Image (cartoon, rainbow, N blue to C red):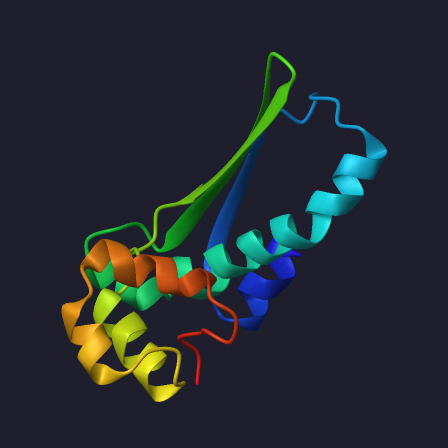
Length: 128
C-alpha cells in the first residue's frame, strides 16, 4: 500500500518495519488494521514531501517511514514516524476555519498544540 500510494503521488518512500515478529491476537489486529492503514496513508500523503521539495530543503529525495511494533509487558506499542516536514499549523488553522470545524475567533486563541489536536476531529482535513 505504501509503495503504491507513493507511486501514485510521485513520491519516493522507504518503509522500515521493526518488530514484525511481535505476536498480536487476530481480533486485535482486525480492530487496529483500519487506523494503522490510515496513519500510514497520512504519512505518505501528508508527511513525506515531493522529491524536489525534499532536496530543496537539504534532505534526500527519498523519504523514510518507520513502523515499529513492540510488546511491553501485556501492552503492544505501535509507533509510526516519518521524516517529513511536520504538520503545518497555519494550514490546519485555515482548513479548520474553512470547513467550519472552528471559527476565526476561536482559531486566533488556539495554541499550536491545540491546533494539532484538530487533525483528529471528524470532518477535518487539510486536503482540498
